Length: 232
Image (cartoon, rainbow, N blue to C red; front, side):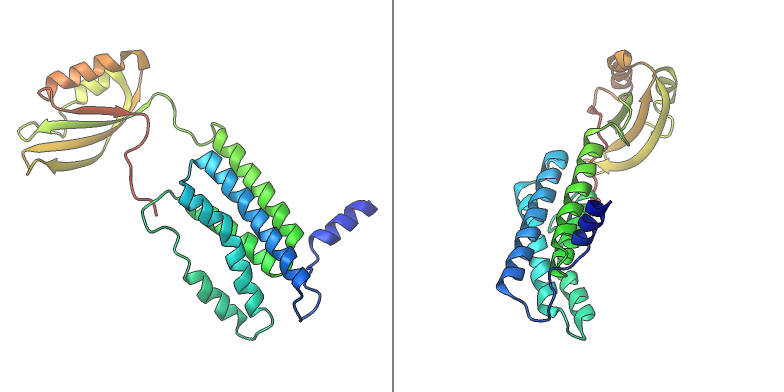
């Protein structure tokens, strides 16, 4: 019980014990921020297959946030300054995944804790959350069923897309939903996107052959993943 209380006290005790910063305090906070950032970046890079550029950004983001917090510590306008510094952080210059936001905010939270002197808490917090995120990413939680397919079917303009494949989907799919439609090739063709749950995965080719005879042998694409969209 005594060891537990001592460990809890260390975790939730700031190393910034005085208003005057020392080199030792800054060095400890920097090391904790860098270690936290590397843990978060490694976990996200392995689980989410992030780019090297984004992983490096996440790795050094806690240090940058820590420096800002250290500089405004003790000032009356600290809250406004911190909010302003956070608003300068641009998550991504290109569209990316929604999970990128979680990685960025986790890194910012670790940097904020280090900037306030809670180095041990920041390190433990980063390891625990990154570990849980890694395990969830590697598990089947929230994953799509293997029988789900996303079909992109091109049809000529004279084919009524509303019920063009209704009978085929009724024979081969449990559910089929039209999720998007657009014109291509200057309006001469339509591109339909369906979300389909197959009755039997072994009969997928048979279903695609039936669709191919219906759409005039135009392009058909079947994938396990949803069509790429801009999430951020």
